[in-house]
Every structure is written in C-alpha cells, then in structure tokens.
Image 1 (cartoon, rainbow, N blue to C red):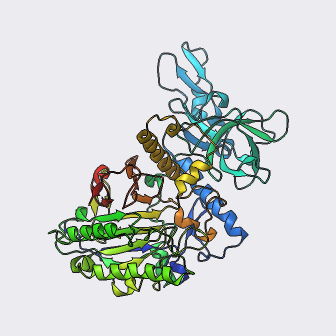
Image 2: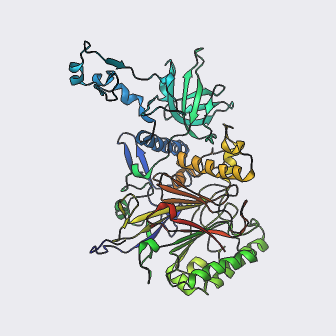
Image 3: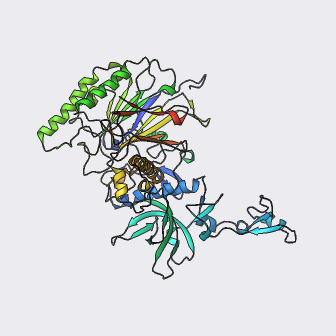
Length: 561
C-alpha cells in the first residue's frame, strides 16, 4: 500500500531489460556488472556486451558464473555452512583451539578459543572434556549433522593433499571424454565409480557441483568422488538490492543513451485502488496461425477489457508464434507469417482500453525467424516480419528471449510478507529451447526421483521439480554445455539468475504447467503451451501474476479459457 503522506518523487513505470538493446534496439541493455574477486563485490564492466566475442569472453562467461555461485555459497545460511579453506588457513592461532564443553551441558566454554579462553582452561576441573573438530571423512554433504561446518578446498590445492576433501567447481569434459572438476586456476580428473549422488540431482556437463572425495593414492592425479550435490540456491536476501548486474540506475545516468532501464509506461492506471491489484498475464506457445488459439486469445482480451478494474498492466506472449517453422527462403512462408501479425494488429484495434493501459510483450521462440544458429539469447522479431505492429501500437514491444521486466512503483511502497518495504518487483520470461530434455539427455547421474516414480503423472511432477531445482541452484536458465545449447558469450549474463528476480516464467515442451515457491523468495512457473500441454485436459492455460501481492503463495494463479 502507498505510504501515507509520502509524495511520489518519480512516476511508476514498467521497464524492460533486453539482451540486444545495446546493439541499436529501442530498449537498451546497459553495461553488465561482473564480480570483482579482489573487491568482493559486483562492479561495472569496462565495455558494452557484444555478439562477436573473443576467446576471453568464453572463459569470462564461466568465470563470472563460478564467482557468483561461490559468493552465494559462502553466504548460504542453511545447514551445512561452507567456508573457504584459505579463510581457515589465515585464522588466528586461538581460533584453532578445540571447543571445551562441560559434560551434561550443551553450552560451550571455549567456543572460539581466543586468549581469554586459553587462560580459563583448568584441566583439574572434573567433568570437562575436549571436543575435537569433526574430520572430513566423518562429514557428509547429503546427510549433514546439526550446525555442520564444511571447509571447501580449492581445486588447485588437491594434488599432493592427502585425505578427504570437499571441493566446488565446474564439471567439464576433456577431449578424451573424461570428466574434470575445475575452478579459475586448475582442473583435476574425476572418477565416479564410488559416487553416491543426491537423489534430487540433475547434473550435466558444465554444471557447478559440490564434491566430497579423495585424491588417488597412486599419484595419477585422479580425484575419487564419494558424494556429489548441487550448490545451495542463490537467495535474494543475500543480494545487494542497490546493485543490478544488468546495469545500475546511477551508472546509467552517467552513460547517457546506454541505459539498462528504459521507462516505457506509467503504471498509474485509472481506477486502480492499490498496487497489490496490479496484474500480469503470461502465456506460452501462442500460435497465431491456429484459429482456435486466436479465438481463445480474443476471449481473454475481451474478458479483461470489460472488467470494471483496469486491465492487466502487462501481457507476456511467448512463441513459437506459428505451428510450423518459418522458411525464410520461401516467399509463401514469409507471407503467411506476416499475415498472422497483420490479423493480430486488426484484432487489437477492438480493445482500446487494453491498448491504452496495458503493455504487450512478445518473446520469440526457438523456431521463430529471429534467432541465428539456435543461439541464446534470441533477438527480437523484426518489424519486416511483424508488419510493424510495434510501431502501430505504443504499448506493443518485441523483446529478446529471455527478457527481464521490472515494475517500479516510484514513490509508492508495499509491505512484503517479512515486514520489509519494497517498491520494485521484477520477473523473467523465457521460451526454453527444450532445455529440460537436453538436461536429462546429458545427465551424468541417473539416480533421480522421476526415474523411480510409478505413475506417469508422478514422473512428470518429479521432472518439473528437478528441472526447477537445477536452474535455481545453477543460477542460470540454461545450465548445459555449449555443445548442447550454444550461447552468445558476451550476453550470457542475461540468462543468469543472479540477482534472482521475484518470479521466472518458463515455457518448455517437456515441462507441464506447474508453479513452485522456493523458500518464500522466488516463484518458478512453467506456463505450458497455450493450445495444449502434456497433462492438461482443460485446454488453453495461462497465468495471472500479481507481483505486489503481500503473500507469495497466492500471487500466481492458473486459469483456463
């Protein structure tokens, strides 16, 4: 709710963050931010992102993801907690003193073992025992004890370092096919013959993992893995709200036209009583060349048009926008594609209230004539293919895939569930090029919940959960190798989930309509196909999202036409 007596210092706005805006598009992409290891924070990059990246861009792409996930690893507040071995090494001598506990009592006498604790120790006192720190071989990633504290060893420190160690790094496959674990300095060959994986794991090439294992006693440089799991999820509560890896507002003012947040609309809709009533409608796989789909789309627009309250602030339509891929070498195929958009343009003229108050965002699919060579992110559809619909209507926007949409209330604030105040909410829309199937096809670990489920419905629900868990813990919308799904190296940050948005909407052929709330922090939602979905028998599903709803559990609602 708006704060009483607080004047609006700036207008409320809907803002788009587009992957290719810095290359001359209407919506600018802005300077990306990268993690500076020496400063331990995100700082502006020195140059604008580019499509024609060199070899340094390729290595920087994985390095940025590694550093961001490692930062989240140190900040994780769950059990176990993780600490860098380098931090342990430079700890004071007093901190290496064992814990002193009185028998029969739970309190610790000498917790950190500083100088005062050394003086207070009296070996003549009865009932005193010494608690030795747990050994690495007695600790577990999969079954941690209460208040477990695990020391992470750098990969470069593994050779010649005997004993059980815990490491964090990137799984990569060498030319001979063997898997390696690597960080920014070194890589070591892995042996999974003794590995006990987590049952919730989808690990493929180019995944970041936590490993428990031991270097081979034969001196062959092989690390034998005993346990493996994914790193903890990046939480918004540990991310600096003043820093945005897509470009900072303060920085943008200095850069002039290279702004990452372009104000495109004022949210101040007539008749809107509260920011909590703001709505976003999201639907995936909207085939404009299908008569039944087109009719149902018109029904949705008509239904919101005749409501007493304002229509949704944003409509998000994800491709593919035709049932069959467009052949750009065929004049007939191109004419048919353009005719679909011309028909949509005529249909939108029937809804003046919607076009005056709503923003329509179109996100291309992998089979739309926008991408090149299957690369992610996919550029926006051009005006020559969409019959200039974005020029005809001020509220129509052709965006990249994925796109990040931010809603800024300006001088208004709303109270969140934890009692904090906020005036911004952002979400992402991603038309997946079948990333879920690619993850499973390249999965290293086969001990999965979905493989053990007996019924088809149970297997599909488990698949949905495993897919959501993979992208959230990897902090990336496409956590597979470049050979499996190529990505523009300089624009990989658009696919990252650091810092996490409030919600992520994904349309993937292998994932049915499903929504999941993770730690009251982020919502992951699979929209399914608008025409049909794998387990949907009600037809034409779409989602209504209320970004400023006070309770995360009820801000996403599924509906059917």
